[in-house]
Length: 462
Image 1 (tube, rainbow, N blue to C red):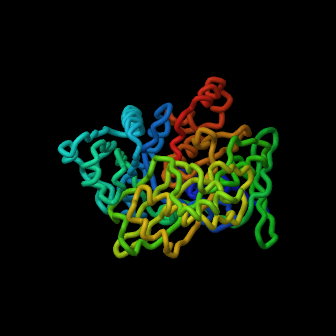
Image 2: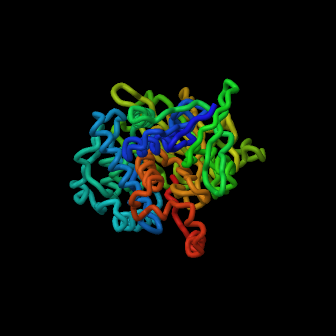
Image 3: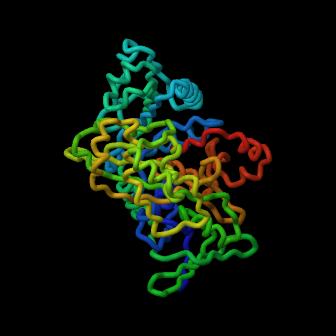
């Protein structure tokens, strides 16, 4: 069977859906085919914390400008859909017990302010903090931008009473929050289909090229049927499989994958403030274990790592509204293991619920009451596919008509609207935003960029 399409997109995760939406709804490209062997939005797009932020202080302002644009679009979609995907602006709350890191918080906040994240308000006393506006439980309007930095222990105790007494600084980044990723994806997909996008169930197993130009895409269906779609535009939005799909046209992508998990549990004792934002401990730590347990763990090569220094970044947020007591916790202690090829089903980590809970106790001591008898929990997750500096790949590949929209490393939901818009502009040869070159694969051909990578600094990864 053979037919034609203006554009074929490989991958019906949030990135591919956003590209299809931008092409069909934004640019009127009607004959767009979205191909995936799985149901749309079912691999990694529904496995994240579903959070978003414009808080990306870095070596330049590209990520903040890009995310501000994406959040603009999220808010537009929320307005026209009666907030179908429950966008809120609870914020990201970074905390530290290290006085030296408190000064680092201030330096990063000033950097983010210069780069466009908004004004920073610094509270060095409880009197200063009276101007602080806590986040609303729902919605995203009438919230301040920028960030609120608390450097006074008394003010921290007043506004964040569930945090540990050892916390000496709290940074509340404000143009941040979370949403329902499934509902966002469903909204974009519904609009895309109404504008002419077709979803095809199947696996892209060949991409045809003639004279360095895309000519067609070969699809294998689960039924055994094969289909050739003639097209001159092919988009690689294959998420953790992007590297493999690029190899079908002999293109190497400079990406790798990390395993990231999350655990959901019921906070029966009401320890976590249901109104709080996403709360992050920005300190590395060594877990507290009973002496006999520590000795047993340290005696084995397979478990000794649990007694050693663990990375910063354990974080949580409340999930759901109304009577919900669910809390999500995440801790990226697997990132030292890089996958060139992803493994499905995901590798099992039987220690994850306990380690995440023990790590979070350092920030939220009230969770200690769950340590002796862990609550029933549910663990899922996916792969963060990323570049070395943790910036996406959005733009042309080295073959005429081939494009990539990938390497979103856990920020795919928040970046999808702007990423789809940007790639659609590349495909339709429309005007590009200033940040476009910062996400192009061609950036790695620039010797000055390669030099910058040697001293890049923060990648913004939680």
